[in-house]
Image 1: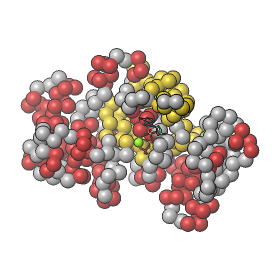
Image 2: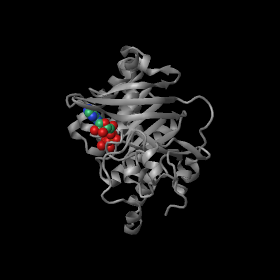
Image 3: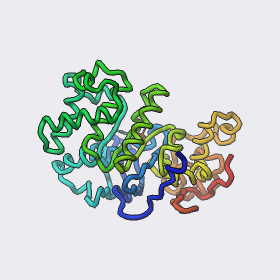
Length: 334
Ligand SMILES: Nc1ncnc2c1ncn2[C@@H]1O[C@H](COP(=O)(O)OP(=O)(O)OP(=O)(O)O)[C@@H](O)[C@H]1O
Ligand SMILES: [Mg+2]
């Protein structure tokens, strides 16, 4: 699998280009929360990019900005989001709605809350196909049945007519995946989609999701808090901290040579090795990230120097395609 994942995606027109994106949530009587900062991300057709970061780092905010579905009072302050040559921020809501669900789809957790409890699952899939592809009921039902087969639902004929409450959590997640993929989107965002499932079901669902997007050459932004999942799953890994990408690299380069102290800390935490964790985890570190004239991670960084507390860091390419936002990148971390 490792060889297969090392596809090279550095040529041609990206399917999604995010440039200089800043997203904030105004807070009454206080400074706004800057949830995404100066973020650039370019994803090639068929490429799977893992986006890893702790809770509150801005992952969902980024995903929702792309979908044009930011939760109030969130707002995109500056930046461009180009999808397939279209400027998504400039599209009228009606056209954006046509793109959403058809060309860009989202797979999210809590599948039950996504599904209409009063409509059979087969119909829910075929309704999406009808709405976006303008096809007749029979054809859409057939597509829905094909999708139920593709997501490997056991006994698809019977499940077509089942209601959501009759499905297990893993099956409901597969149905949500079928809804997301039925129109063969060019780009899928998976936001923590399997986090509610138990580990074995999670592994099966992830393998399936990956196989499906690979077979359709669909690009994917795969959001997770679990850095371990990104190994072998993604072509590139991006680590986000306090709304900034702090490291982005081809998967192999990232795992062989992580260079940002935060990435190394995440990997050490994942390694379940107390010595390693103690080495990279700073006790009593300030929870609130510094910004404005400082590296955002300086307060929690085991290697921070005065320079880091006084100067923000830029993303720099330190190996081919491997960019790091750190004044003193880590060498030989573990
Ligand atoms: N509706 C909101 N109003 C105000 N602030 C918000 C809102 N939604 C998110 N935020 C803030 O924006 C920042 C990013 O939140 P976001 O939900 O994007 O993080 P996340 O990386 O998806 O976290 P998680 O892993 O928990 O899903 C956080 O500081 C959060 O408190
Ligand atoms: Mg989130």
